[in-house]
Amino acid sequence: MDRNSIIGLFIIAGILIGWMIYSAPSKEEIARQKHIQDSIKLTQQKAEKAKAEIAKLNNTTILSDNTDSTIVLTDSAKFSLKKQVYGDFIAASEGEDKTIILENELVKLSIASKGGRIASVELKKYKRFDGKPLILFNPDSSTQNITFSAYSKIFSTDSLYFTTEGTTNAGAKSLAMRLYAGSKDKYIEYVYTLKDDDYMMHFDVNVVGMQHIISSNTQNLILNWSMKTPMQEKNQQTQAAASTIYYKNVDENVDKISEGKEEKLELPPNVKWVGLKQQFFTSVIIADSAFKNAEIETKLANGSQKYVKEFSSSLSIPYNHKASEKFGMSLYFGPNHFKTLKKYDLDLDKQINLGWKIFGWINRLLTIPIFNFLSSLNLNFGIIILILTLIIKVLLLPIAYKTVLSSAKMRVLKPEIDELNEKFKDQDPMKKQQATMALYNQAGVNPMAGCIPVLLQMPILIALFSFFPASIELRQQGFLWASDLSTYDSVYNFGFSIPWYGDHVSLFALLMTASTLLYTWSNSQLMGSSNQMPGMQWMMYLMPILFLGFLNNYSAGLSWYYFLANMFTFAQTWIMQNYVIDSVALHAKIQENKKKPVKVSKFQERLEQMTKERQQQVTQKKK
Image 1: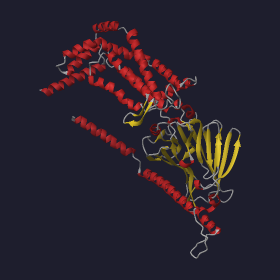
Image 2 (image 1 turned 180 degrees about the vertical axis):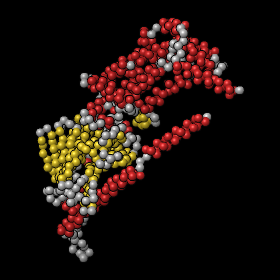
Image 3 (image 1 turned 135 degrees about the horizontal axis):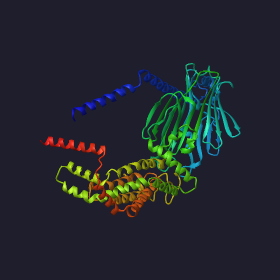
Image 4 (image 1 turned 90 degrees about the vertical axis):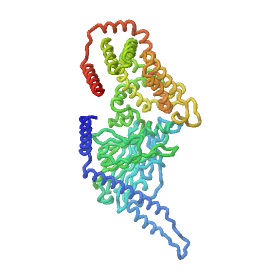
């Protein structure tokens, strides 16, 4: 490295360090975030302690054998003890845990009177991979409660009983549940409103007459919402790899915890919504305004055959100690279907992983509209993928033609290039490169022309790689021998797992691999370079085989698409090579170009100048 390079590295390092110092949070911001996090943790710890005290009290044994050592708790004594624990919530400490059903054509919600919480949600139009009802979460593996401070204790609503007050309105189903604090004018109320034919429901929390019961230093009520996500799909690893928590702050972009991480995250203030996303389904809580603060966490359900991941969130609801306060929210329980989520205009569709940046836009603007149109024709989804592949290939036909034409030009020039290689084999490689570039210039051939069309096609190929595994339309849709195009197809199960490959044979993955090898071979023949760079040729054949281990456990729909794309490419290349492009006429045209004055571009001039300077440096070093 010369002096300029070293100076440049120091400048870059200085810029990076300066940027890190500039963008680092201030001491006040760090202290504020730590205070928020400590407050949430303290509230949760106090809530757990209060639950333990309540459980201990409810399990109190009353002795009555009338011996001197016996302590007899009278009803009044027991009431006095419970009064110390529950305060004005003593009447709500006992009751019958009833289940109220709230449902429409799409969802069925079971709401428990104990805690007033949504205990389970069933999506009526979907099934698990084994045909059983699809339950997003169940009572034993989920929580929904509000914790708050009163009487120097922390109360949690899920240990208290709500009074049910249900009404049914035209076009909507409403259920009101109240947790009374000693009288009818003091209560916390949950109001659930479910519209017909909608996955979204409204959820209001009303706090009435509680200003002298909830501790005066309380500024937030903490809404805790967590669940263990059940096994919904055939491939547990794939479901885990697509499941995480998404969130959006007001006036900011959607973000998430990485699917591969177990992480606890303190979110910036003013959280608009939090989504507990499974592979093809999601549960989202959305504030009408914003949650003041939030903390979220994801964990793997390690070793469990029943659950995939554990999600938890703590959301701060602002409380101002007024006689009556209302905090409005909405709850979405439904599929990760792009059109369905998009209609709410809340960026909920960003939970569907359609690919990064340009790849996501290709799917949104090109793939999804074509896919939705073909789906409206009620065709089999295997046929839809075939037509989609054909449409994309037609759109890319001009690029494909440029690629084949460039390859044909290179093939025509191959004898002359071989002569140059032989002529300069014992000389400076720079001279051979100069002579080769001069030949290209004389013939009017750009050796990069074949690479550019390939690069232009790559965004579409990568975009579809994200689209098919994320498309709920393919879920449990059969085609040929595959029963579900959203996951792997299996024509034979080994009964044991092979490292790298898996425990089954995916025929679509094998077809895709075979077609890739065929395409690689045909492309090699087309380029006329079977004797050049043998190491690279070997790698080109090895890569599809190595990739087979990944595709064997991936979406059958994706393997089917890539198989079709390879076969269409092979067919159109063969047609162009034999019926469209005339090699004799192309050779004659190249020979005519060689007679014309050579036009050197500025880029070529700079390249030649760099080559000369490099030769001079080599010569000086030899001296």
